[in-house]
Image (cartoon, rainbow, N blue to C red; front, side, top):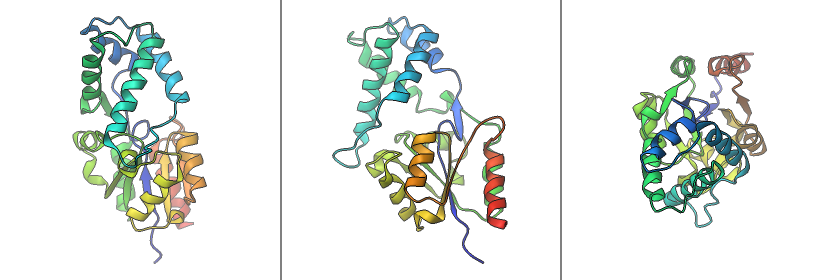
Length: 229
């Protein structure tokens, strides 16, 4: 029997999601440091910034600090766009608490079909992993959400020194699991970072979640039927 392709999953937005909106979380935590963020304005600022900004460049190669520095600059930009002044002395302490909070399970929830989807693919003989632009907080989050043991490999951008959609992270991920890019499949949620990047890097297929019509389990069945057809 030919070897089944390796199936990678993106993390946030694919396997799990925020327990509350960014605006609600940021405004609640920032209030303890004297900031008054409007949740709706903060949500809008975050969405605009995240769609526009470049991922960390890792110009010096793999760099754990690059993620934290990137997030601090990003959060400062969101605060400013939402009408608060990130130059205030309390911002650094506020950011530290925000960064810590979003590295814990309380900030996140699994999508309803996540666990069943992982079990389904494993029951069919697929090896599965994570390929994400999330930072090094990710492994602790996966473990806290009780799905860390499902994955044979967790590949994150700061450990590779490149972020999706750069081909380096896709190629390195394939090498680390002992496969060629053409023997890898990615299930994600971002048309550019996941789909465009993965296909350009030579992945066999990239499937995007589009809930509720195409959730993880639907896409997993698509992968299974594609192999068996």
